[in-house]
Image (cartoon, rainbow, N blue to C red; front, side, top):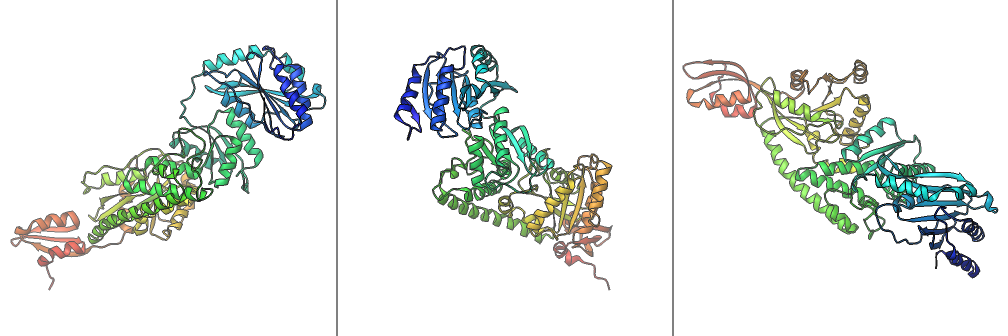
Length: 603
C-alpha cells in the first residue's frame, strides 16, 4: 500500500511503487542499486519526496509519497530500548542530499538504524547521498552524518557492521533521566547577558549544553533570529541532545510556535524562565498569588483565540512539564481565556485583602514614628545578607526572628520582610528587604509585585545595594534605576551601598566611584562585616529626625516609664534625686505624650 500525498499521481506510477515491495535488500547494504534508481526516477518525475522503510530482514514495510520538501515516515512496529530495527531511505527532489532537521529528529527520536537522503539527479550515478546514524555524545544519544557520498560508496558501506557497533555503544549509555532538561541558550544581546541567562537556567535546574550568540540590531518578526540561524540551532539541538531552547529575550506567541515547528522541541523565553524561578521560590501566600498573577498575565495575550488549547502554552511539547510549565495556577491554564480572566480577577481580589492587612501594620509603624528604609538592588547583590547583618549588629534589636534566606543564587528572596533595627542614637527604623531586580525584568512581574514594592515607594530612604565585585555592576545599576523609574521611585533619597568590597578589584571600584560621582555612596562588605556601623550612621544622617529634646523627673513609683525611655529614646543625661529619676532624652512625640505629666518646665 502506498500512503501519503498520492493525489494527482498516475496509476502507472503507483503500480511502479507497489512493485518495490517485491524487492529484498541485502542486510549488509543500506539499500540496493535497483531501489535507489527506481525511487530516483519516480521522484524526479512526480517532483515529490518518496520515503521507503526497510526492516532488518531486508523487506520493505512501507512507502509514502510526500511534498517537494517533506514526506511522512510510514508507521513502524517498534519494540525494545535499542535501535528500532528499521532504516528509512528517502529522496530530496531539490538535489540537495543534506539531512534536514526533521530527518535528524526522526533518526534520533525514533532510534532508526539509519536514515538516508538521496539528492535527485537525472543520472543516478551523479546523485549525492547523505546517511545518518545514531551516535553517542556526552552520555547521550545524538547522531553522525556521512555527507556527499556517491552511490557506489554508499553501496560499499558495511551496513551490518555499522549497526552492530551503534547497538553496542547505545547499550552502554546511561541515559539521562526523562525529566532532565538540557538547554541550548540563544542571545542576540551580549556575552554578559548570555552568561546571566546561564545562571537563570541553572536556577531552574536546567543544564545548559550549548550557547549561541548572534548579535543583531533587528529582531526577525517570525523567528527572532534569522531563519538560517534557526536551522543551525535545530541541528545543534540534535547534536547536543537538547530538549529545550531558551531565548534571551521575550518572544511572541507566534515566534514560539514558529520556532518549535522548526527546532522540534520546547522553546521558551527569558520571561518564562524568570517566572518559573519565581514560581519555585515563592513561599508566602502573597508571593504565590503575585507569581500566579504574573504567569497568567504573561500567557493570556499569547492564546491564539478565545477557545485556544493551552497545551503548548504550558511550556511547549515536553511530556513531564519542566521549566516554563510548573508553578501556581497551572491547572487553571488548561482552561480557556474566559477562565483565565476570571482567575486573574480572583487573584486581584485576594491580593487586595492581603494588602489591607499589611496596611494595618504600616499604620502601627507610622504611629510609632518609625522611619522606613528599603533595600533594593540587582538580584544576588547581597541584599539579604546585608539586612541580616544589620539586624545582628543592632544592639537593641533583640527580637528573635528568622533571617531571610542568604544564598549565592538569583532571586533567593521573593517575599518582602520587615524588621526593626535600632540606630546608634536609639532611634528605631523598619528595614525591608525586597525582591531583586534584573535586566529585562518582565513587565508582568513589576505589575504583579507592585503591592510588595510599595515598601520602596513609602520608604524614607532607599539602600541601593550593588555587587562591587561584579564586572557588570554599572549595567546592573542602570537596570535597577530603570525599574525604580518605572515605579516612580527614582527621585527617592538613595544611598548606593557598594557591597562585597573585600572581593572587588581596585580597577572595578575605581570605575564605580567615577560612575557614581555625585551620588551618596558607602563601601561595605556584609559577609566580612566591614563598615556596617558606618552604614548605620549614614542611615541615621539621611532619615528624617523625629526626636525632640525633653527633660523629665520620673517618680520612683513610675519607673516603668524609665524603661520605655531607654528602649525608645536617646538618653542624654540621667541622675537620681529625692523626687525621682532626673532624665534628659531625645524622644519621639508618641513617647513624650506618655511622660509629659513629669516634664521639667524651664522657668
